[in-house]
Amino acid sequence: MAGMNLSTGERLVGLAHLRQSIADILPRDEDMASIILQFKFRDIRPKAASEISNLHDASKLLEHGDKQITKKVYRRIGETVKPTR
Image (cartoon, rainbow, N blue to C red):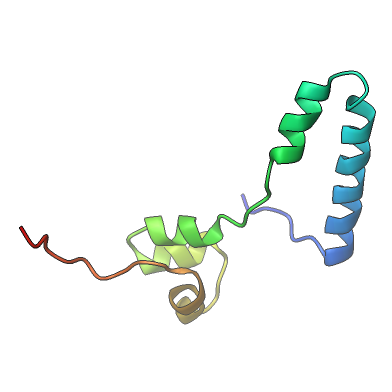
């Protein structure tokens, strides 16, 4: 099942709602509000694409029609080298 594609506006509305929820929690539980505020949203697609060894499967996961997009933009796999010792 694929995730939902959100427009920039939808993301901003979601973040505004999240900020309001944190503001509501803050007076009641400062420790919890502090933990929530430290959370960082990150795009995990590059990590997911890099951990899948098969380029076809990685492209399918990211719903790319062209494998080259996955390879060029999302795959972050370096060359495997032998240890010096």
